Every structure is written in C-alpha cells, then in structure tokens.
Length: 177
Image (cartoon, rainbow, N blue to C red; front, side, top):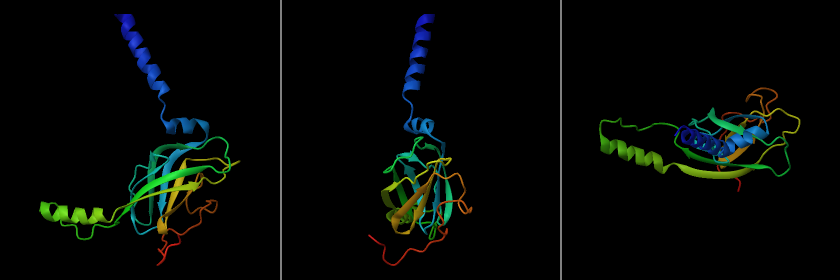
C-alpha cells in the first residue's frame, strides 16, 4: 500500500511538472515580469490579456494598472515577433447609478452600461529588445482602439522609457483606418 501511494504521488508530481503553463515556459526563456498597462483613453479597460495571459486589473480612464503574472519574452528578439492583445472597453464612470435598493432600476442601469462595452483584439509588433534587460510587458491603450507595447524595465514617464505619449490623449473626430 505504501508503494502504491508513493507511486501515485510521484505520478501526480511528474504530470504537474510536465503540464507547465505557457506563461511559465515563456518566462524561463527570457527576462520575465508582470503584465502592466497604461490607459491613454477616456474609456475604462474592463479586462485585457497578452497572448491569452490575463492582465488581471481593471484600468480606469487615463490611468495605469495591471499586475498579471507572468510574461517573459524569448531570450533572443527576432524580426516579425508579435503579441496579441485582447481587451474590452466600457464606460469609465458610474453616472446614473441608482444604488442596490431597487432591483429593476439597478438591472436597467447595468444593461445600459454593458451595452457600451466593446471587445477588441489587435496583433502588434514586439519592439526590438536586443541588448536590453526586459521586465514583462506594458500595454499602452491608445485612442482609436490602438495599442503599443514595450518590454522596457524603465517606468512610464521616465526619460529612458521608450513610449513618450501623454497620459490623457483625446480621441480624434475620425480615426484612421
């Protein structure tokens, strides 16, 4: 009986070790860190992911956040490398919130808010990080449903940070196609 239990436990341990999540496999091949985001738009980012790995946090208008674990890039950058960003935008305020006392009013308000949610997906180039330390990935949500990414270890706003866009960006009347 003792051998059977040990055998089962060993089998479970080996199977667990072999079913390594994609994010952990990525993390081992290059510098790894969290999935962060900077939202340059008036819309809330209700949720987002990078190559299917969740960014965890809801990000308000003109704000930053994230904290999903973990994202790492391959040890060597190659031309043509991309990442897929999936996200949902929605209202960034609670205007008209009726409280929780009247279910009918609350459900009507909730339906109105959800009607303004929009799903987005975009594949964008992963910038060349050759010779640089990498620290996860930061996604910049931009007007016109655009995104940019960086693997820089510098923080947004520092002189060495590669994306130099203002936090509060206005959406143009007509977005480029």
